[in-house]
Length: 109
Length: 109
DNA sequence: GACCCAATATACATTGTAGAAGAAATATAG
DNA sequence: CTATATTTCTTCTACAATGTATATTGGGTC
Image (cartoon, rainbow over all chains, first blue to last red; front, side, top):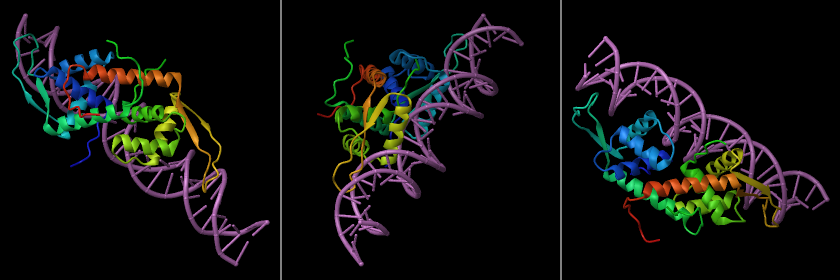
C-alpha cells in the first residue's frame, strides 16, 4: 500500500469531482474548479491531473454517449475509486490536523 | 503582485510555524510537522521549503543565540510575513470553498 | 468542408523529498 | 591548554513528482 500524497491541485480536482457527482467530465470539472478556486485553470492542466490520478488508480472513468448538440462529442466521466476516496479523506484530515489551534482567516461566507 | 499559489508541504510548514509561534526553527518545525502529519519528514525537505518560502518573501527569519547545551548551535527562527499570512489565508479559504457541500470522512478531533 | 466541443500529447516550471556535506557549539583526552 | 570527538543545526545538491500552458488530434453537427 503506497503512501499516496496528494498535491494541491489533485486534491482540488478530486473534491470537485465529488461535488459534481455524475456529470464530472473534463470541461465541467475545469469550470467548477475555476469557480470554487476563483482562478482560471486551463483544460490542459486539468486533464493532465486527471490522467495522473487515473494512473495512480485514485480515479476511474467511462465514456458517455455523444450529445446531439453541435460538436457534442462523447464525454469521459470521472469518479473516485475506493482508494481515491481514502487518499482524499486522509489529505483532508491532515489539513484539519494542521489547522487545529490556529486562528486563520475568517470563513464568513 | 504575483499570484502566490502554495503547495501542500508549503502550506503545512507555514501552519506549523504559526502553531509554534516563537520557537519555530528547523528541527522543531520538522518534528511538529511529522507529528501533525503522522508521517516522517526529513530535515532536508523542510529546509528546502523554508528557503523557497523565504525567497518568495512569504517567510522571514532571524538568528537566535547559541544555547549552552552540547552542540547548541544558533538556531534560525522563522515567522510569516504579512504577504505570507495572506497567501496562507487564501489557500485555506480556497480549501474550505472546495470542501463546501461535501461529506468527507471527518474523524473526531 | 467549416465549425464546435471534448480529449490527448508535449514541454517546461515549480514543488516535494532525500542524503551528504558544512558550520558552530560543548565535551573530553592527553 | 589545545586538539579532536561529538552533538546540534544548517546548507548544498540532485532528482522525482506535480503544476501549468499550448498545440494537436478526434469526433460530432451545420
